[in-house]
Image (cartoon, rainbow, N blue to C red; front, side):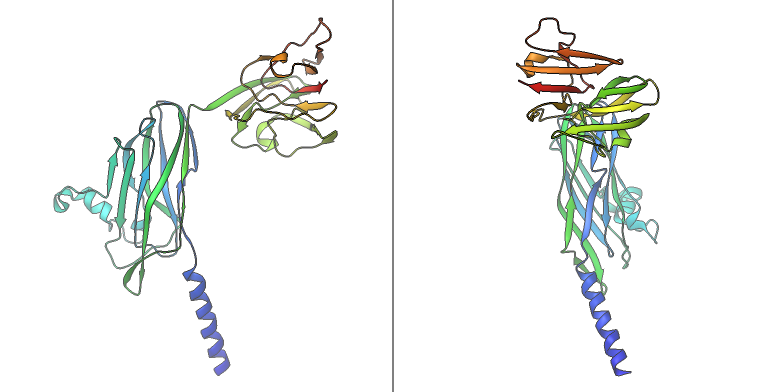
Length: 317
């Protein structure tokens, strides 16, 4: 019996130690937001913790590109006891709180301040959402959403203590950066590429109506699982269709060529003359069931430009 009691005590101690080192995660969802200029969008500030009594944070953003419309309390801190938070009381009984709010919007400096707490002597467990923030995308660009001065309080033996093991994750907003490329596929074999950085670069999410797909790299054929923007692909379509490829512009467009033949993609959004990128190269394309070629030593070329969405065989001489 004594050994059993000792074992139970040891297990209990281990569980207490484990629970004390569990990280409290506070993060923005979605991590990446893609939106058009002039549109509204919503993010949430989420938290995952086994013991939450109160939370506060500041969120910083580029006020030249974004404006905040509104901040709303989410339901996590209301869990179990509806309408028992500081946010709820200040929202519905402002006269009793001298017009105070649990949040402050400062579009002039690009800052949101938020603080909320339960009014009872109990805590709640995540995951869940603390706040919902509604933005307006004023202008195009890439914006970081930075969480700072984050604090999470927990209730331990009826005492409020600050959580020390805190993990914070920020977010990003991309305004008017999504590009759409349409590639005409013919039934049968096609030579194509993805000229943008994809939101999801798995082969199945990008290439519809594909029966077979092959890539060629380092003088070897392979069956790809993920799309590499700098590679071209042989794809066999089960019918003629228009392929829609959506993503953001590729920043590093340099393609390193191996000796011999390379099957490359074209990571640009506009057409370019072949000599602009490769001054002394033989290039082949395959489109509409027909081969096209460029040879710098021959004037009668059937191929003169690189076009977004297509793949090319190239040999740098």
